[in-house]
Image (spheres, helix red, strand yellow):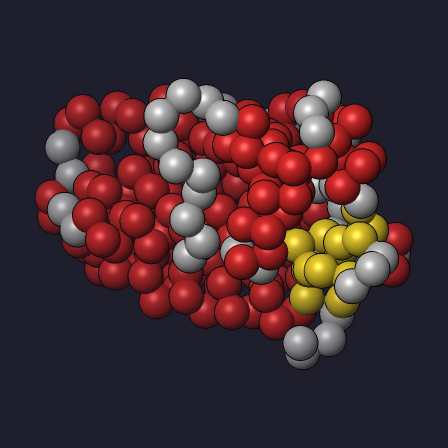
Length: 232
């Protein structure tokens, strides 16, 4: 993973990196869009130098592609991206849920219940960001309850990798009630302390989520959305 700009006072490079990454992850800058240093500098109210540094870092993270002498491209979302992330989530989050059922505390259960209550409003893009932050916190919190910090860190990275995919999916189909019910079902399994049931619930939910996202993306105008429905 690329290193972020160094610690200390909030530098212009860090500001540019964080603002640009947020715009990419939330699809304010759409997948497949061509972007330019000058336009981004004006967008964020700074010079080209910190923007260039941010673009280089995001290029190392795979979120930006360099177009020699023609600017940059926001990396498209591919079918392979979707499949790979869900494959890893099925491996890691099912194990995390099973372990969490054995180790979760009352405080952690209360936190999960509070996160379940966070909803989004279809077509209200401002609410998407709040919901997806809560969604990431929910899944990371389940992994943290497993007692394995490295597992929780991997799950957090996968959810970040999925954020653009989920933003696109939320925009194409209203799944608010479905997703809230799925989270509540998992909390109930954890409350029972049933590891096998928790694994089963997460497996079913991730398979359902993958199907929901793929159906939404396949049904979209892929060229306009920056989606490449190809293997790579």
